[in-house]
Length: 249
Length: 68
Ligand SMILES: Cc1ncc(C[n+]2csc(CCOP(=O)(O)OP(=O)(O)O)c2C)c(N)n1
Ligand code: SF4
Ligand code: SF4
Ligand code: SF4
Image (tube, rainbow over the protein chains, first blue to last red):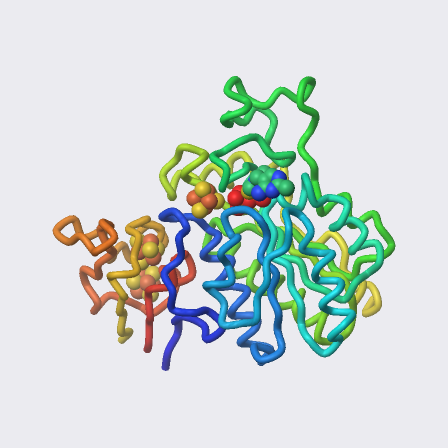
């Protein structure tokens, strides 16, 4: 019996991600959810601008790429035009929480029946490690060499907490890809976010805390430790909104 | 007993599987370099592998297959 192997919804192409970058783990979890729900033939993915811009090479799916931050708007169009398709946006934190904040907020407010996988690595990875809206207080980046100063640069944006205040969305959860235990809960949350769409429940977003060993200047292992010590305390894991759980009460 | 295999050419030598293994039976094989220049992970003692799958759970490159 096979306990672990590459899911069918992933291609066999080697990824361009840096060694130990957890984008790869998150890709696998998305593919596993698609396999588990048997929706490979009708799923459409939207890659963002960012390190995962080439995600279309890695999924055995119809894929497209949106202009920076606009994946939820493209997802809205695809889903409304083809309601039988399962549509997901895969976005980084620079993509979703900065230039694309408006699209994300309004797609959530409209309760579009789409799935958003929001990969928060607290930095702009692709462009070389600039400060993101999600960079932590004191975090050293290329554009905050003395550490992020909240008085100068503002406070990090907590996307789940913010979106959960809206009446629109169905499901908002934050998970992390930094340990076996956390990856297993991330797997459940991502599968739920896709199942909600299959059941027609509405907007589901899973924020996955992710590593960027290259731009954090850490080994892959130390990067996972930094997520535990520094990132998760600032971005607590958990379910922020779940309308189906509320209905069940 | 579990059977553990790796697609060594796709491994990036990140070591996350090595750190995740509760049995500490994986290592980075310093004697091997794959065509991308990485030092791939290697099984040291398959007889002690429980097939728990922790290594594969943490592998960003999906190159580990485990069967029981
Ligand atoms: C309109 C526009 N503005 C800016 C850029 C430059 N740019 C490319 S990727 C990126 C941010 C990527 O960061 P993130 O979304 O966090 O993804 P990561 O690379 O960290 O996975 C930016 C600002 C662009 N490509 N297009
Ligand atoms: S730059 Fe960072 S986010 Fe991009 S692939 Fe490398 S480690 Fe991953
Ligand atoms: S399956 Fe478990 S015991 Fe076997 S190598 Fe992987 S982590 Fe170690
Ligand atoms: S986690 Fe995967 S890519 Fe990293 S060293 Fe282990 S087998 Fe290689």
